[in-house]
Image (cartoon, rainbow, N blue to C red):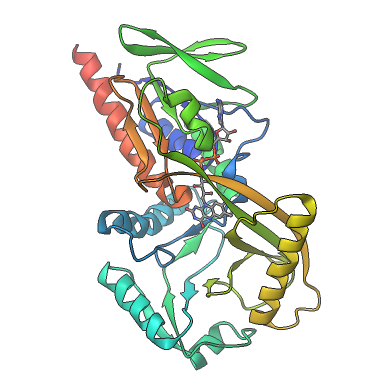
Length: 353
Ligand SMILES: Cc1cc2nc3c(=O)[nH]c(=O)nc-3n(C[C@H](O)[C@H](O)[C@H](O)COP(=O)(O)OP(=O)(O)OC[C@H]3O[C@@H](n4cnc5c(N)ncnc54)[C@H](O)[C@@H]3O)c2cc1C
């Protein structure tokens, strides 16, 4: 089985990243998604920040190392794909309520290997001229980047197709058929598709497909909100995370703000939430007369209560793999590398057997 046939379920950032890596390594790859468009799950609502300085104090060192490695992985992939992945965001700035807390934050991230610099109020002014109430001290991580998630998925799928992968939309997998303790086909309403390996990268829906084969009890949906604001804010090229707001530029005319999902998710609840975010943005960047909320959406982040991703082989099945975890954009290249290695290693074993 030198060129295994692999079916990847899910064309979000995780599935498209894995599909590209598999196709590049020579697997006969089929990427399927139940939606009529790729990136139609939580990826569509993502902030797309690739970096480590948003991590909490309880982040384990091994996990932190993955966050740092993602910056290099995305940089290398962007070069490989001719610049289609990163969106031009350069650097991230974060500060806490007061100087002491920001200093503590700086010490924490530096202790885990992040390239972070202290940046004083005046320097911050030259970097973010529009900033109103500048903190005395912030931390600046010059290497951090971002992707535009929809575009990144399209770029990865296109690149995977150029390497021979097939992409099938409107295809909802509802289970697997098995033979000799292995999956031998993925089941769709339209029929069964024979395959050597399966990767489940179905985000928050993954539990449905994986639960017969592995413990998925700690897989949970964690809602978060994305607010898109039409507003031109020149000279604003980095991610900003303050105690009040997490914001970055999406394109020339839009900013995006990520935050906790509101309890009231009715239309009026989301509208009020958008206006509150706009107020917070104005407190940070001034009047912004042209600013207008154009979209408030909620995405369900697939995560686990333990914080550990579901990654790798499922239970006793040697050819069924899971790839679900948070933060999924950052972790996608790590998932893709690990599963590509595992699948080719297993395919080599099958070849001998
Ligand atoms: C507001 C917000 C901000 C965020 N910011 C960041 C950030 O800055 N950095 C970061 O790393 N992460 C961030 N995240 C989290 C990140 O968006 C997710 O972790 C990531 O997008 C998960 O991608 P995925 O491909 O695993 O899942 P999804 O994007 O949900 O993709 C799963 C795909 O599987 C398909 N599918 C499901 N079931 C089936 C089936 N049975 N058959 C076929 N197809 C199926 C779905 O249609 C979907 O397209 C954020 C999330 C939100 C909501």
